[in-house]
Length: 189
Image (cartoon, rainbow, N blue to C red; front, side, top):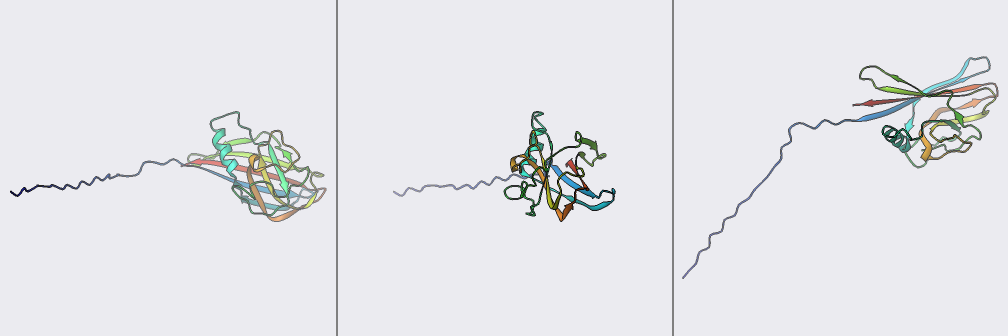
């Protein structure tokens, strides 16, 4: 007797079709720095405007500050002579070569302003090294710091919110004043 077995094979394919794309919300943080060196007569000797690099700590600062008022606020800036390229982390994420006693508290509390409908919001930080402060012929870098209180040390990447390397070194003489204005713009998209 022969027994025949009947075998059935069935293939099943499942596919998910996604129609459209879920909206993605992004927050961009950009900053520009304006540097103005004035001589004793008040005339501009050097001026530069450029984009800085927001460090990993700067990213953390913004994210944590948005949910926790206790997070340290920006307290001031430091100057240095290092020309290493700015970096998100590691070498270049903090002052490379600190100029002793160049730490400077903000001139006043940071200000903020609405840039207009759909254009974002701006925070502005200003530091001025007046005549007699920090005389140096090779200033090449500046950082924005949240160290509290600001001390006479190079600081670390853990308290450097952003860093900017000048296009050319600045020769600040005893009678010169140096003003750095840091504008940080936030825009959700």
